[in-house]
Image 1 (tube, rainbow, N blue to C red):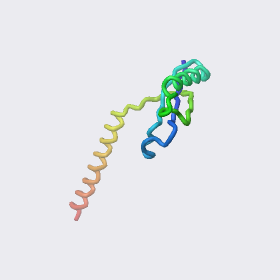
Image 2: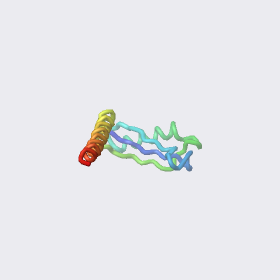
Image 3: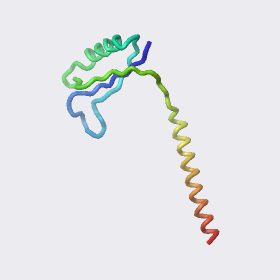
Image 4: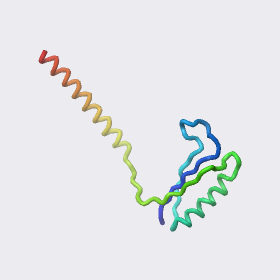
Length: 100
């Protein structure tokens, strides 16, 4: 099975141009891109065939690799880095004050 993602954009302006209302990305697992397209058309037929949910744009992507980012670790590392930078600034200020 290959992994595909489909980008769906709802027809119309959506609720607010700044936050991309009316867009969605869905996962599809299929053996070929043709099978993925058939699955996608079935999803659109059952879930997006109503006037208020009609779509203006659909893109299907074949995904070669998927990398999950450990966001807890990322934010912890970022927080640690900010603490180190803050401490360095404070140390520099303390050193200047001491030298004065």
